Amino acid sequence: MLELGAELETRDLDNQPLSEKELNELIGKRDYKIFLNARNEIYRERKLGEKPPTREEAIQLMARNPNLIKRPVVVRGDRIVLGLDVPAYLSIMN
Image 1 (tube, rainbow, N blue to C red):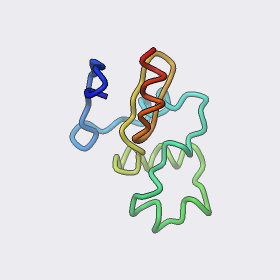
Image 2: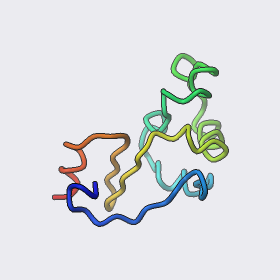
Image 3: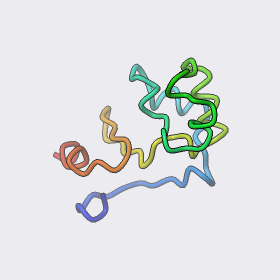
Image 4: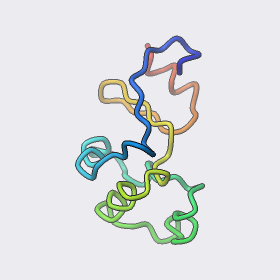
């Protein structure tokens, strides 16, 4: 995003994890499953793709294990882009 000329407020989720409350607010009415990082070890070990956790369980897992959150998370207003998706970044910059 910085390469695209966007000014960003950043947060290192490893050092400042999102709380359950913050995750609830971030996810809002969106499908919580899209926030789960399928490449994460916990995701694979628990077979979360085959047996998805409830929303509450997923939020608890992501709050305790920030690497389980698909990153980067880019928020602009009420729009969110998860993962490395340059076309989506460009669309929310306009």
